Length: 324
Image 1: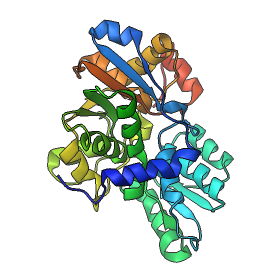
Image 2: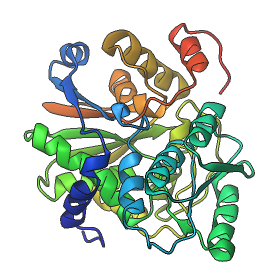
Image 3: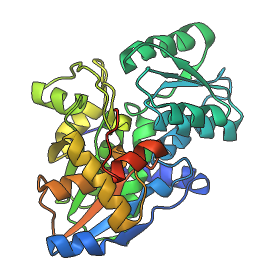
């Protein structure tokens, strides 16, 4: 297994972004540990400044920008855009986020509140990417993609360093999987130091492009569908350079969940852990509850984000009808 990104890149990213992020908090889950008769630990990354892990990769990228750049742009389902908007504001750089019509309104408002412009283009990430690339080609913006970029992957990988420092005997880690930047970075950080750690990628049945691409043996397009795990939507890019190979090489298995299973994870987080999570943030818990994942002796479950529309959250926890 070889990759352009090395453990040293992740360690350098940690030093670089350290003053700008909130360190990872890991706690035991009494309810899940009792249910599975082993130690289940929750990694509370939803406590991050922008409500999700994406700040790590975005900040690592912005802090390495060419000072002559016109501004930064990206295609995002919400959390990367929010993180990039925050990072750009900290650096005093203009920011335009290109998004599809499927992105929830609460995430659009959060990005705009940070001073960035949002441009809604089409019904897929691929359609939105056309505008982002135009900004690069015609207006001199720098593209900071949400996952397939070495600086982004290294930034997300800092979570793996913090996990291993706090739980050196961890044997299984449950990580959200979408474009693959998060799981690739964490897996590289962990397996570079502890090769036998099992990495399980978790996503939704409704449109997980990485799972479909791995099954096909190459990056492919999938239809983007409304889902509770909206932050895990989007394609991986037919010209994917890094994360497809890294997921193939470093991730031990990929588990997909139904919408009802994701909803059950959100409810468990709220009622048993006293935590509000978005769908994508709750998939690790959901995967355990379904029995689709067998935990190890010491398992870390990443809770990656909390940026959910609160009216939707209310309906889910009350088991009322809702639209996706």
